[in-house]
Image (cartoon, rainbow, N blue to C red; front, side, top):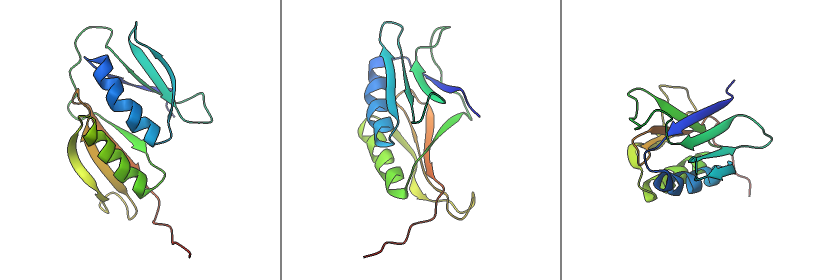
Length: 134
C-alpha cells in the first residue's frame, strides 16, 4: 500500500539517536544515512518497500501535524513494551502506555509516544497472545 513514509525533523542528529534504536528493536534495518542532505531510510525485509524516511523538510522548519500519526507494526506485545521503553529512554514523550485497546479490536495491543520533534507515533501488535508450552 505505501511506497514510503517521511517523518520530518529539525535536528537530524537528535532524531537519529531516537529512531535508530527504536527501529532496530522492531527489526527494521537501516538502509542508508546521508547526513549531508540530511536524511536516512529504513526498511523491513524482504524489501525494497515500504521505506521509513527521516529528514529535514525541503521547505524549511518542521512543525508536527495535529492528527497525524505513524503506526509501526510489532511482532509481539513484548516488542511493543520494549519499543515504548526505548522511545522514552531516547527523549520520547509518552502519549499512552502499552496496553490492550479493545475498543479498536479484541487483540489490539499498542503504545503511543512522540519523538523529540513532537511527531506522534504508535507501535502496535494485532495478534492474540500465544500460549506458551513448557
